[in-house]
Length: 244
Image (cartoon, rainbow, N blue to C red; front, side, top):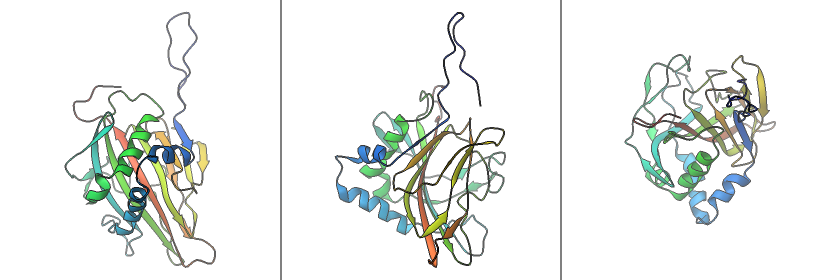
């Protein structure tokens, strides 16, 4: 891991902030307080309306998703025009180097109070400087598994996403085993393992300082199928934003 930040001569070095934070559901639950209870119920129900990811290249779709992007203006989010999602091949060996056009977020989700409150709370808890980090990409993802075919939350293996920060929020985990999240240093040595089990449990990581991966999803014992729903939020500088 990187060492302490430089300090003026004669002063002790400033300890660098840890490259990730893992917190329980109470943080985002607090951010949602004051909003109508049915707004969060409608938000989580929207995962039942995700179309299949057409870019998987598998016979059976096991991943379903929608995507949208926003400019962050203080406490307000500005929805940006829908566009393809792109990752360089250097950070995504499986799907990098091509534009992937996913279905857009539903209007009710993109404009809803629940998403806006969650994104603002995540932005406030980035494990590093926020200056210039004024844009985010929002991914709604469902991964399914059956007794005949496991699901792969991260088919690219241990990887970076190519952004400044990445937030991983559990929305639903039903009848599944596996899907352990693991963070690694830049030499691919494990630094943190977690099995997200409680809705709204979250990991926020500095994508420039740690790598990450997720183990396959399989049905729980006795279940014929299982579902894991995640909200992923990428944070990065927008065009014309100042440097960190």
